[in-house]
Image 1 (tube, rainbow, N blue to C red):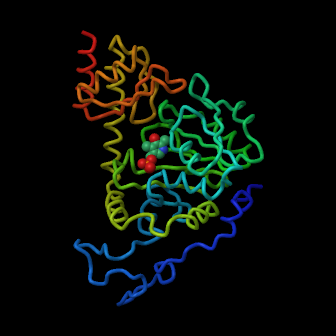
Image 2 (cartoon, helix red, strand yellow):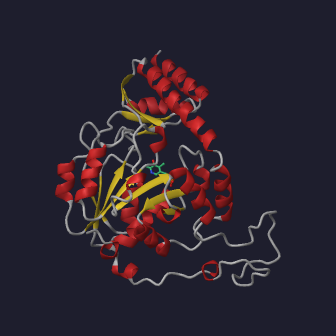
Image 3 (cartoon, rainbow, N blue to C red):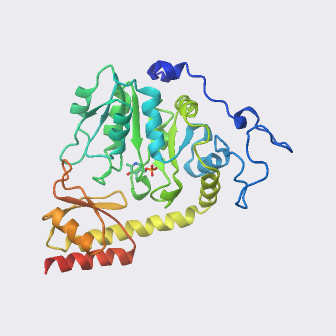
Length: 349
Ligand SMILES: *Cc1c(COP(=O)(O)O)cnc(C)c1O
């Protein structure tokens, strides 16, 4: 039986959370003199002189409709980065506990672990970029609190086999985080509908990629109410600004526009893959379930430097394990992709 209480750090179990003015009084009133705000207003026309809703009820309601998950199973963070960091702070005892990552993968799991003085154990992916379950299992001990799975994975662009993720969920006694930042570009099913079956599951998503809102900083964690309660207890009281809440609410009304962008980006991804494959300097293009391609080229560093001279910046992943000789290229607009291909053709001559 999985019990969130038993996995928590003792100091978090005993924590009396901060109680903000907006927590203590939630109703309507004529005069608000409870939060030391500036009653005169602000230089802006909106009501930015008031503190925002600490639990973002309206945004969660709208997200709940789109995702088909009740609001009490949703936590909103200042980017996924906050959703990641809070799990370390709530569940991992510094200097004692460990977590497992599956490299090559998103760098923030490791950075956040190190900030929190948590040991990171590495179950490197297999050559086909799938989970190495045997290695994973061997790394688990009684101090292993979290297993981080990124699917579709950054920078390898593939999705993890669903059965493998289910095996981890069914056999690991700690938290299993499935980071689905790129799920909208994939044909694979999200794990977001499996929360009922897995009390140890945390699904991360973000508005930074498919939704095109990286600048607003909104990350989402979907989990059991017990885990969401922990998130809410540990988070800074007003972690999502009023401006972000208003703009996100407006954007969430435009699902069709976002779906259209996803369709375009996926079709551009396929076109870009085809065009790249025709270039002699490209030796391999890995299958992508994301909005980027992992591309193996001859002499990656020279190609990277050359593109930079042409004003095009890609990500050099050539020194990353299993990604030797690879560049990570984000799918751009049709124009940008054409410019990239044109530049690479020049490199040949
Ligand atoms: C881009 C990305 C994110 C998004 O992070 P935000 O802080 O929400 O912008 C999360 N996870 C992975 C794997 C990513 O590549």
